[in-house]
Image (cartoon, rainbow, N blue to C red; front, side, top):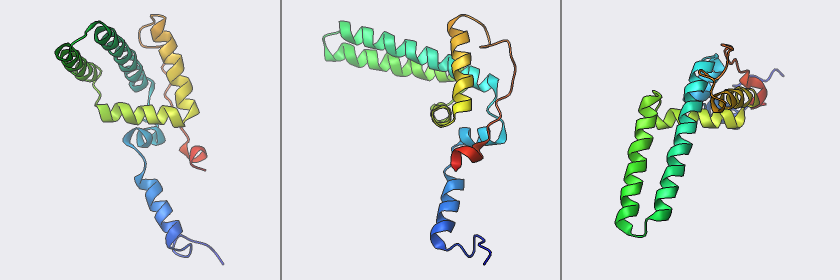
Length: 142
């Protein structure tokens, strides 16, 4: 008997539907080949800026001993984080989606790490290469 989605039964159909729905926007872009070096470079720059902002926040909080000072430090961090996302033309949700894609996909993670290393070494744009990251999500989903 040929097993098509209609003959696989309800559980298989639910899994199929959930797997399609569960793709985040960044994962969908990666699947379509739209998660390119330019977007990963913006993400990496935002990542570095967010780390710096968090480090600065922790340094301030360590020096402040009153609740009002800590509240001000948190407000400054929140404003800085918002500014970072605007500067890198990215929403927090997009940032989180790309973070998830990097966590799940070794090929994307390798490109991200290459870009991050280049940025940390001071190379503008992350790398001399302009290769597009094309991700075959079928292997990751099996």
